[in-house]
Image 1 (cartoon, rainbow, N blue to C red):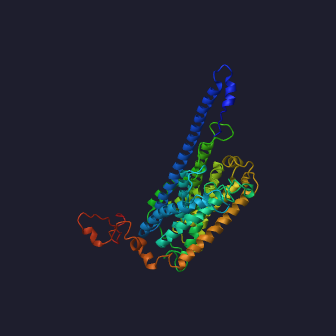
Image 2 (cartoon, one colour):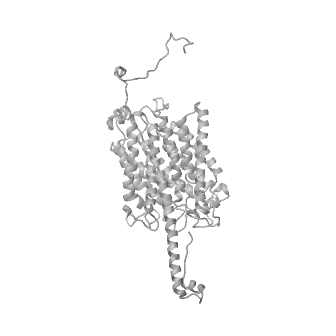
Image 3 (cartoon, helix red, strand yellow):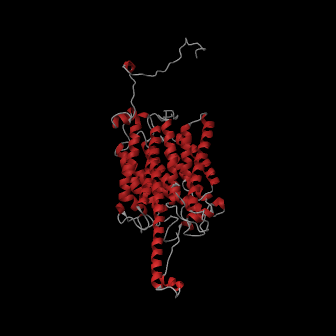
Length: 505
């Protein structure tokens, strides 16, 4: 909002000599003007913080989506376990992000590598951050942890979940978000001091790299060190599908994540009440937010349809689970460039994201990599494509609007820009891969050596709900005599016999 000032001395001269006590009148008018201006400023802060809080609630609702998606993607005997890990991702992540994570990510002033202020939200709020901003960033941090939990599902000890989730949300993820989102980060596009990386910094608007690559690569190392689930691959090397027990929960979780993504991507503007300098009263940041929601939608829809037909050709089936994963892969890919690309480019993004996911899944089978939710392939692979896609398709106009603090920034290579943005984004891919590998890889390895990572073969075969959580998530009636109990009605399956005629069938 443009600043509004009032000078009593200047106003007194405008009132002229015919006004009695013009100086006093001018002072009174200016005082009322200042009150009105302060009210306008307070209203702007209120609107922007309300928008950010609403976006934080949407992103947090994605935890329910993750929980439903994970529950449906695992076998019924591990349902309670995976649901509990999703709850603890949020709970443990909340405490550790409060104590350390937010300070490491956004504590300012700091160096380019890591933040060093606002531990435990000390000296908070500030002129830069309010509590709504902390809540929003916490929701992002636990999303990264939730991605990793899917990769190591059905075979991981409970204590390992607690350790890796706390470490990821309290240290590993915050450092990466500091690099690319903080005003002090060495590769941030909003860096206040020092030169921007290649004159632009990294445009990872809502986190294809910061969130999805971090979670996906962490899950990759966890699943590699643990090894595949028992029965996932035959002795001959053939892949055996260990399908999840509920496609209904998978679809429910997918729609909840879709809904939450409208806080994830459009909400990353952090504020809505900002006009753009072209002077149009109908075009401002609210328009960019709407466009971001559109690009997000188009990328996901395109990826879903592409996956549907590609998997139909490859497998001969119309598989709803594959379509859901394809949809989420499109969302993960568009997250980096959702605010700076045209809607038609989002369709390209979603199309390629689907092919990337299918290709990564094929590689996973070849190398006997077992990820029950395809989280490493989906978030790691499609997130990487999203980072590269942004460097190719970011438009000059939208880059200037979203990042106005430095005119003349480099933009997408395919949109007429030079290769500087692409170079910056290739560096982002490499440093995220290196950082997460150097931190989460050794952590999982140490847990493995201490026998704190994987459960026993007996527990894995029986299911963790029974062996670790006191019972199954569902009530089963498998005994033959259950049907004889009063009030018990059971459905039985009638198998055709050799005496059944073709007419009866």
